[in-house]
Image (cartoon, rainbow, N blue to C red; front, side, top):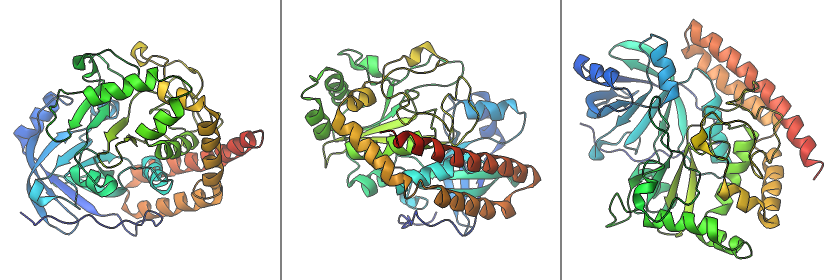
Length: 401
């Protein structure tokens, strides 16, 4: 087993120079256990081999994702999305929990890059070629979990705070969304809506008192006191950065469009809650439908002021108190608009995005098979069209403000 590695210093403004190859090894019985219960199976043992040929054995393996995983299962192929958990003393690239998503496209890669460049706390993401038991699986996106003490320590200076993953939304199970509305004084009413992953020192996994207090104050603090309370208890600047980037890339499958796909971390150092985005693959899409109602012409205030669209689940509700209370105050709304203007002239500028998309596209092509190359070409063309239309739409709206 190799010695623990240190986190790699990342220049997110740069693009990768190659696509590493990594591999998983899993036994037939262990794979069968995952296939029998793809959303609820316990982790199974396996091995991971990195691009340098170093073997990490054992690691814990499982499938990951919900409806993207369902689509892969229904395709009748062998490809799956994976979660790999490494031993504490043998972390991979300084992180213990990693995700591998089949993504022969650039949507989530670029989304994570833009979040980092815009000042949002997210893990780095990079493409790899994944092999499972000697069989090439395809182009996958590799990115670490926030449920990772090394990530929290590096980004926030401490891993001792409470960390929650928002929402429970998997096929054929009752759904629990994370609207940030007050659910009452009992901890049990918050389970699954907010899955507690890490705990501050000495706190039990079932102790939701800190989160309950934050949500109660978020909803009940008088309007005149709300701006001061929010700045004291929440990372407003980071969340504003998130809102700008998320809106620009039409991130329709995350907050505030849907009450899911985010994490909340209470930093022990700042004593403020931090919003961490998650699953950013549903982005940069020109097509619109009832699930993806944004598209390149969406308002920069989409879902900020009132309920829009027609969500597929009644449990998703129509309330979004965090963003709507925040945006009802001119100081926060004006700061959002100003930050939008700044990023639109830097990392969200059309020529910069076109160049970055085309550079990443050229990087992936030599590592793609014929099917992936066509998928990549189609997705890249759609992204380039999206960027052109989105720039025009956003600039037009900002000119009216």
